[in-house]
Length: 255
Image (cartoon, rainbow, N blue to C red; front, top):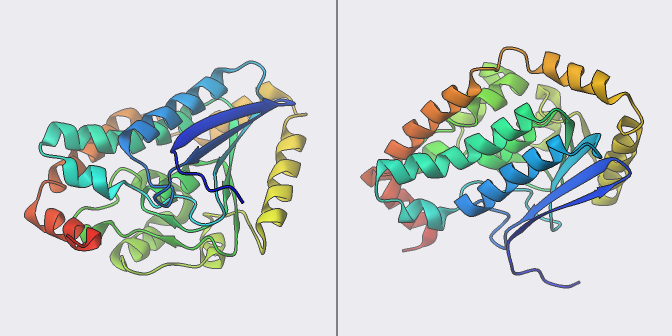
C-alpha cells in the first residue's frame, strides 16, 4: 500500500454524488489551512447543480479525524489568531449546515474533538465498530465550545456532558449509535463503503428539491449558528493562550 505523506482535500463527482475526502498525515488532524479548504469544498459541492448528495470521508484506514492540530495550537500567540483558528471548525460545521444537499459522513476510525463535530454535523453518519469517539478538550484547558451545538443537537445535552467531563475516555461506536450520533455501525471498512455508496446512490435518484426542503426542516432553529459559533470560537481562542493549555499541549507533544 502506498504511504500518503501530504495533506489534501479533494472531491470527486460521479453520477450526482460528490465525495469530499480530506487527509493529514498526523491522524487526519486539522490545521487551519485544511479546515478552510474543507469548508470551501463542501460549499462548492453544495452549490454544484450536478450534485444531489455529498459524502464526507477521510483517507486512510485508521483515525477519521484527530481534531485540532496541536502544532498549530502551540503556535497561537494572541486572541485574534486563536479565534481565527477555532473559526475554522465553525466554518466547516456551518458549511455542512447550510449546504442545500444532504451530507453522509463515513467514519472509518476514531474521532476526537473536532472530528466528533464533523460526524455530528452530517445529516446521516455511518461508521465502523472501530470508530470510537472522544471529547478531550478539557484535558488541555479548553472546551468543545465550537462543536457543542452540533454534538448536542445529535446526542443531547446529557450525553454531551458525559463525553466532555470524561475527557480521557473513548466511547464506543455502539455507544455513539445508541445516542444517535451514528445511524449504522459496520464491522469492516468494506461493509461501510458499500453501505455509504448504496445509500448515496439511492438518494441521488430522489427529487433534489424534496431533499433540499427536508434538510431545511431538519436544521430549523440553527439559523443563529453563524454568530453563535463565532462567539464560541472566541471562547476557545482566549483559553488556548492560558498557561494551563500551553503546558498541557507541551506535555502531549513531549516538549
